[in-house]
Length: 204
Length: 425
Image (cartoon, rainbow over all chains, first blue to last red; front, top):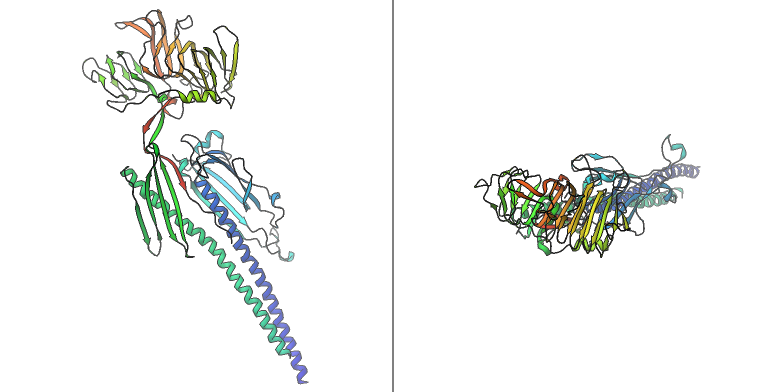
């Protein structure tokens, strides 16, 4: 009788423990996925931000004085001149935001490629972003309407860059847990903004 | 038995959870580490910027400063250092390089570089002068002469009476006689300066020659150029080329054609007339003859205009002695005579020809004559009405490949900032 009671108690205790541990494992796995997503997003963001920031800072390098360094300025597209590889030849740099359909193979339905092209070279993706927004400002800090008309391109002296990155994959949530207007996965999001990115070469 | 199983179960799950926790902590640390790394590279960059500004301040206090200057910070708020120095470049230019060092939390030393390039000289356009000569000869500025825009001569400016210089007048030698003495009663509204550095004329017009054969037009014979304004739209003018005054049109040039470099050059005499709509330089390896009025479609004195013409001659730009120019002549252009003069053909024998209206700029080696006076009375040729085209105050606004000169400067011509692409691990 005593042995039977031991077995029943053990089963109850063990079962409860197992339930607790399984729940904890679930939570831990989800948390790990979230942290992993955060890390991935941070990596994507810092990599892309450093490249964009660095190249925009050198916008106009090597371009003769009096010539406009910016060739095209739109909300999510910029074409500019700079001797980016410092070989004495002025290069045409193009940054543009791709479409969400170009990243259909990722789970995130909002991410899109940020594209970069040097001269007539291949168009390469330099990161996956969900937002890439540019605003153009004059020397006095007055915003210019986008797209900037060609006769105002020379007035651009500062660029405000806003970029948002989300992880391409994230743990899917139980449909019952997804509220109205919410997404079905736990995407990590990180936002980066340079409010006054000024190239000294456009301030001559 | 059941108790043992439970213990084993608990230990198993504890191991799994422990593993997950370690991983979670690693990810969390790395996520923060990414931002820390971004922050550290920003600090390294800001240190380089601080060094650059410090060195720039030194350079503008003393342009012969070469450095180096080193500053080290070792406070809890900021660690790191920068070193800046300058290097000489060709044509009097200079490079200032600043390198910063920042000890990152990972034990790495982050370095950032900023390079600032200075021009030793700066190109300016001759079109910024309303009037400029290498030699004034023995021609005098007299009462009723009025000049709008900058005036300069590499020689002496002779004054006899009360001419008015609306902007600054400069000479490399002096005024004859000195201002305010003798017959020099000139009014200098923008002031005057003597003994300024000579502005050297170019040795050739090779830039125009080069452009004429690479995207422009070059003709080996004498040519007649007739400018036509096209439609009322802006920038759609045409230039028609003939090889004789009454011969057929041998070439048509659309000024709106993006592949056209804006330069027409003739090896021989180049004759010009018409209405310009666009920007163009007409040049001759010998002389340019103005056969009739040359005007812009949009008059810059009457409103906004983007039309701009350069008349550049290796020798002379001459207002032809013909019926069309016998009663007034209007020229909207920047005129440049490298070795000769701007003058009127047969100025002393052509008879009274009315007024010569020039809107633009006149730069010539030796001052030429457009009329002859007896006392203050015009006996032959033109009386002058020269107006400076104020758009030319901006040296960047000049006819295509218009001659320029260099001035000593210490302007920043380029600014390079290094940047790093973080590796993904």
